[in-house]
Length: 174
Ligand SMILES: Cc1cc2nc3c(=O)[nH]c(=O)nc-3n(C[C@H](O)[C@H](O)[C@H](O)COP(=O)(O)O)c2cc1C
Image 1 (tube, helix red, strand yellow):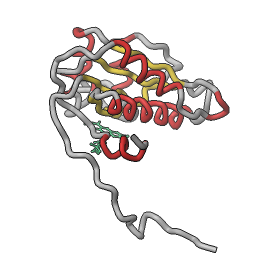
Image 2: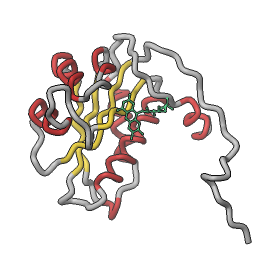
Image 3: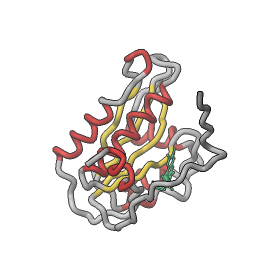
């Protein structure tokens, strides 16, 4: 299948069946992260892979309003970046996590991006402080986002290819 068709099929899946994700699929999803381009070839990100049910359920409250998918998730990948390693750690994290989200879809695993940076937890802490306390990651690592994962418990239509909106795409021809 062409990559464009995989991209059409990728959707944010927030409901999970409860079936376990095979460990080999999690490994491939992480490999997809390592295959992402990175500024100056430096590895400025770290991922915390959570497969512990008790910890996953505590993570539900890491975001005001939008952590509910973690109630039935089988796994969460918490993306952290280190500004001391790269000044563009945000871009490094986002590209790697985006690869993982797409790879998950290609393997039949449902996933959804949960924004972490600049967001708050249910208890008034920042999402970063909440997860740092729960997961114990070091001060120099900043939270970018979380990918919740599980075998799909919902079906969504694939995206249609669009005709380019003129205001978003400006082509300059010779
Ligand atoms: C940077 C970013 C932040 C997002 N944050 C959240 C979030 O906090 N909660 C959530 O449910 N979905 C979040 N999403 C998923 C989007 O809502 C979703 O991609 C969008 O609605 C399009 O739907 P699709 O992914 O099914 O194509 C986020 C996506 C991105 C790229």
